[in-house]
Length: 326
Ligand code: ADP
Ligand code: F6P
Image 1 (tube, rainbow, N blue to C red):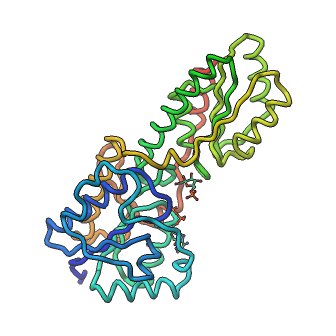
Image 2: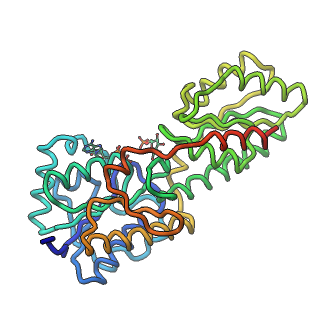
Image 3: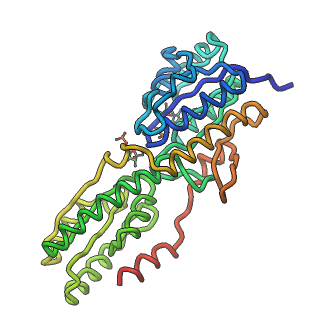
């Protein structure tokens, strides 16, 4: 028979994302509502291994729903990649009597959670917390909406100065392995071209299309590049563009501002729904799944499926970019 989950731990792991605090708040308050004891684990798997674990109360999560970052801090932890590290983590959980875990993070964190629960029979629930939106089984990840709006606000500002000087701007947004921030922010700001890791960059086509626009005196040109684009990011693209075109060109790398800031309404909302649902999953014995939202309904994807499959970016997206920028 399934053991009843009575004491749960919650952690944030991997790259932070706006809305993680709202998710922690939802897990803590829902757990307490159901009579559970709830423990915060500091710095993800690092805190689990170092026994940096503390009891949380309703007040522990007061006044955080609007804050970016994560009150539980986050970390990347090499030790957890090894069985010995995970064993230490398990022993610490046992000391506190914790028999259920909620991990808010990206696919790396889910890989860790999956291994951990297979080895030590601790039910784990994953909540997708990443600005990159590179996780299968959910329409949303906590932090993406805020990050993409931050990028849009910044690119709009760049457009003003680009227009004033008739300049070409190559703007780099985050996305080591995924192009969603580039794709969404690029379309929303009217970029001429969007370069993403999921599609092979045809640099000759990019140059010839910019040359053609130069001839037509289309002077404001924005090219949005995901950092993980196969060609090597904005600096590399700009080097080549400067060699081949007369255009006055500037590079702007948006960087980590995309990870910070107050979460958007959407991110607070999905984080709250997902955090609430994570506790219900633990109570109902629905273990080792990632809680997501698909078609506005909660969805539950086995952790191994959530980490194996990436979302696909169809060619129709690129067609939209091409037609709207012509
Ligand atoms: P994210 O969760 O944002 O994708 P990472 O890929 O850095 O971030 O993963 C966060 C942490 O999860 C790692 O530092 C490590 O402790 C753990 N982790 C990642 N992959 C594995 C794995 N294959 N096995 C065990 N733990 C893992
Ligand atoms: O959160 C995901 C991500 O933003 C990637 O797009 C980026 O490459 C990475 O994190 C950078 O993270 P860090 O600077 O913490 O290594």
